[in-house]
Image 1 (cartoon, rainbow, N blue to C red):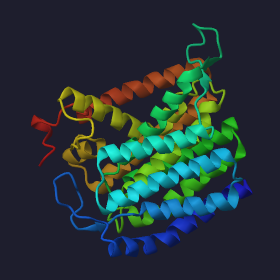
Image 2: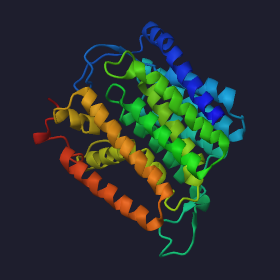
Image 3: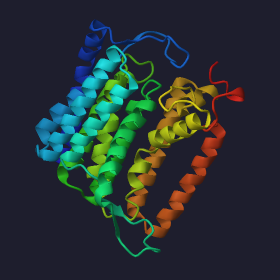
Amino acid sequence: MKDLFMAFAASAAFACAATPFVKRWAEKVKAIDVPKDNRRVHKKPTPLLGGLAIYFACLMSILLFVPLDEKVLGILAGATMIVICGYFDDIKPLSPKTKFAVQIIAAIIAIYCGVRIDRFTNPLYFIYKAKWIELGIFAYPITLLWIVGLTNAFNLIDGLDGLAAGVSAISSVTLLTVAMLVGPEQPYIIMTAILAGSTLGFLPYNFNPAKIFMGDTGALFLGYMLSVISVMGVLKSATALSILVPIFAMGLPIFDTLFAMIRRFASGKSMVEADKGHLHHRLLAKGYSQKKAVLTLYSVSAILGVGAIALVETKLKTAYILVFVVFLLASMGVKYLGLLDAGKGKNKLDV
């Protein structure tokens, strides 16, 4: 616990100390987000590249507190590729194809170094009497989809001051708590604490009104790190519904991305075409202020996090009841916010 706390505190301190320097660098290289369209909710130009502070804090803390085996080095190599891509994208936007290609390569590096979802516990054990579902050759494409999907999911929710940073911190703390309960390898518990600390160290500069944005540099990095850490932690545990634990822990970006894909497909739009139908946009359209919308989404993420922890601690039948309750509440939220609407008519998303 002492090492865990020291790693957490060090990463938070590194991120907090590095952010002002990153802000000045962003202004120097003109990595500035100018509110030039109606999707942006901030009113004045704001520096990007805040993710560099989070990355620096994570890197320094991992080098100090985590033994460097092949898997850790593979994760760091992939993360560095993601950050470099995000850095150049924040200065001058890259094409979606370029970013997607870099994400795939980063995921392949991690997979090659041993970060794989080889199997997960059977959630239908009462029907099919096998404790584990072995993925075999399908482990590679499924892990690739998981890493790339989550990398982009956290990028999609980065639309309000402090939203992506706060949700990432909540997800990290949730995964850390679950990891301590199920007991994966110690290095990955420490890495989760480091990620939580670095994100919280950056958050004071990013919460409304934000002095700096994390940009794609930070959002893509956080999504990538959370995806690989969840693979090395809870997805390898013997928890009855282990496959659902990280889905709950990172539920907000996962569900928001899923609804965005359904919404865009139904309206005939490209999957990479931006819109104003995300959770935070819908809350703003309902009259929420930025702070209230962000705090509301923090609360939802925290509730899902508690649900993830509960899945670890409850018996199978109780876990199914919990999943049903969450599904019911999520359905009510979808209807209230109109998350599957195409953004036309009464939602007034473009006002």
